[in-house]
Amino acid sequence: MATIAEMEQHKAALQQVVELGDMALRLFSNHDFNRLIMQEFCVKEAARYVQSSCDPALGANERADSLALAQASGHLKRWMSVTTQMSHQARADIADVDEQLEYMRSEEV
Image (cartoon, rainbow, N blue to C red; front, side, top):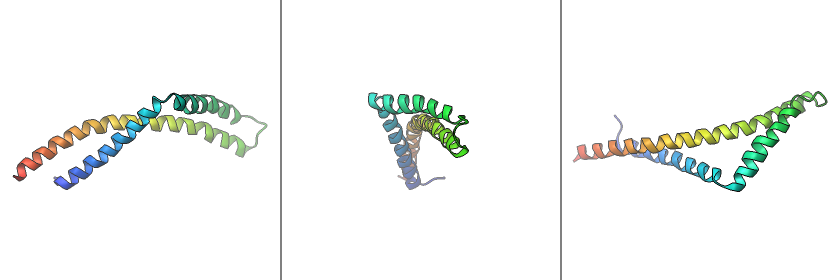
């Protein structure tokens, strides 16, 4: 069984996950971020890089670089999504940790 100190450390780690998720949500609500990163980079530039990745006029290294750049936008979108999902779960887990801490503290008395 975990100690109170370990549970408090776990709660602090969960709070950091929530903080990251909150930052991601703030970015998603920012018009400039959505236009520049999510639309221009993740959609338009990614499509251009995908097309370049199969251009026979480019060398193998340039095609591979184009594919990697196209995939970068997908990785970013996935990471942002996972970060917000983890934040939602961490928020729920904090409530459980708080309950457990309350119980553990009451048992100490």
